[in-house]
Every structure is written in structure tokens, then in C-alpha cells.
Length: 142
Image 1 (cartoon, rainbow, N blue to C red):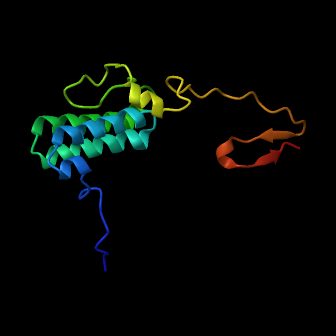
Image 2: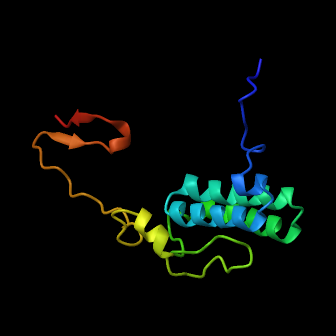
Image 3: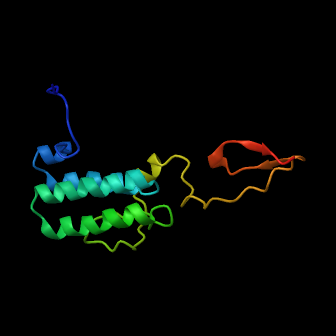
């Protein structure tokens, strides 16, 4: 039995949308996109929310643009994202934009795009061979 307070992603509407302020609703989602675009799940989630809003507004151009961005965000966020991009379909997906001042202040410790992973030098431990971390073990070589 579902609670009356249960919500799903498909039924969620940002407060500005509930008030009929669609431009403000998209502005909130754009801010969420800028803040979350460095992490795949947050980046994809922002595009899914924009897609849902576009669908509810019957905005075919925006909805189609968001579908392509959902796929791209899922596949390439870990490689590169254009800093400050608002994520709307009317803006090139490759266009870097300056971060709004109010959002820059929220990004405490933000120093630019995240660095790529640097491989650590092998651990020197005579008699043992280090197995990749995914296996979580050290196996004796002798």
C-alpha cells in the first residue's frame, strides 16, 4: 500500500513549476546541472529532470535535445564536460560558460575540472605481488 507522501521522479515537479513559473523551473534545473555536471549521476539526473519538464510542457524541441544530452552525459561525463554549461537544448553541448557568481560560492573548494586519475606507483613489498584493488587482496608470490 503506497503512502500518500510517496513520490516518484516522474511525478516530481519543482516548486516554481507548481506555481506556473516555467522559466524559473528551468533556471533551477540549469543551476542543478551546473553544480552536478562533474558527477555522472547528478549530470544525467539534471538532464532527466529537464526532459521531464519539457515533456510536461509539450516542448518537443527541448525534449529531443534533452534525450541526446542524457545519452551524452551518461557516456562522457567522466571524460570531459564544458564548465558552466546550463544544459539546455538551445545551448551547444560543447560550449563552456562562466560560472554564475552565486553558484561559484556554493562550490566550496572548487578549483576547476576534476583531475584525471593518476596511477600510483607499485608498492614495494618483497615476496608479495599486489593484485588490482578491485580484487581486494594480496597474494603471496612464493
